[in-house]
Image (cartoon, rainbow, N blue to C red; front, top):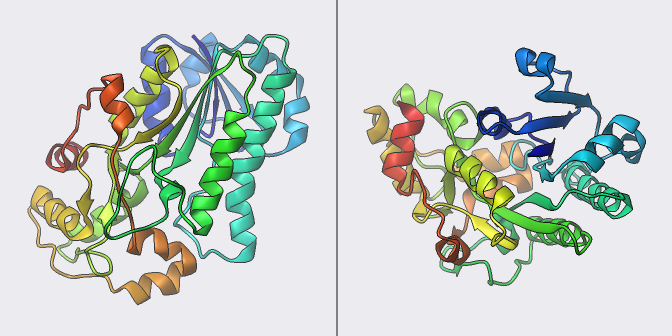
Length: 309
């Protein structure tokens, strides 16, 4: 397939792009970053890199992007500023919103205006859709939460769902993505390897996760399987508490995991953004069962073993 990829040059893209190339897809990457990597693939035409900001309307008037969209079979949009890395000031909240909503709305507008739009849009969302809870269990049909992140995810999904009728659309509510070179696990590993790791906050909050390899396989399946449409919770079948996660990570590294990180320290660093880490939610997927998706890493033991080996 000819694929247009937005927001796929970061943490998830580091594994997704090579996997898509391995499957003989032809890729156009849209990124604010300077082109880097994939020199051989860029030289032979399998990868085209457009240095553009997809959250800016002027980018969608660029002939190269207009042509890429009209000649693509499918679009994968993972664009969005990281959620839990900075304090949620008023300015940063707007960055979080614009990077997701503006990109998705402009993309959908471009699909509607195209004479030959791609037939599939895979669009990111997040399990933050459900809000946070220590006791509830959420599936695809559960209602939206009541906080900022829930509102953002709901608006994000609504923007993606406004595609033309000819476009099959999938919104992936992605959980905590596990891999050693980034994300939450990438930040935890150096601390745990020194023996100073432990649960964050009370340790009772839920972590609903997915190994990056499974997320990439899930995206690839959604691109080609016509049964995939609408909202899918992209989470492994075994959500765990923060305490259980920390304990298993310590075991995987053969290190102690007894030193908790007090919640107030995280709140000092991240402000409202700490809520994502300190409260969490227990999320499962009914859709993945019915779609017959098979996880390579269905358990935390297998996922952490793979990520730390």
